[in-house]
Image 1: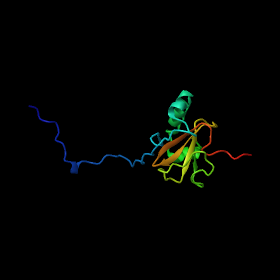
Image 2: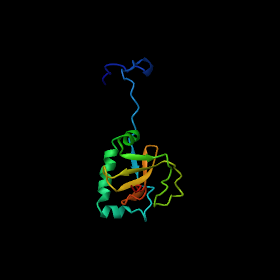
Image 3: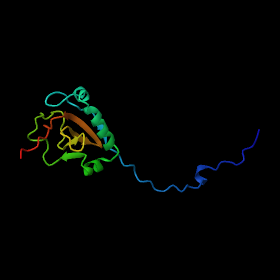
Image 4: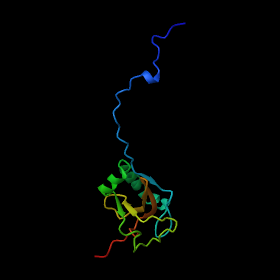
Length: 142
């Protein structure tokens, strides 16, 4: 039997390391498809996949997922509509089971007509509608 070269000090006698104060991790935005409502005037995941739009959406979600919620909003990737509540002229009926007042949209590319509409809660963007015709929040006629 060999003796240990040094006896381990009890915890209360050990010196504290030089770990500095760590900043809290910034929580990145994530996306959830669990609240999606398919059907007219919106589309299903299958319809978007058949048209190649799901791959484009996945790329945008991957890009936006690098940032915090605040950064994504500041960059303009996601637009919040907190002044108006649910869009007054939307062709989508307001879901009765979703009681949020601040709705948001994300274009699947920088200036695309196609958007996903939903809301943000605890750094999660819940996608409720897939809107390839931009009728969730239609643009005013000029």
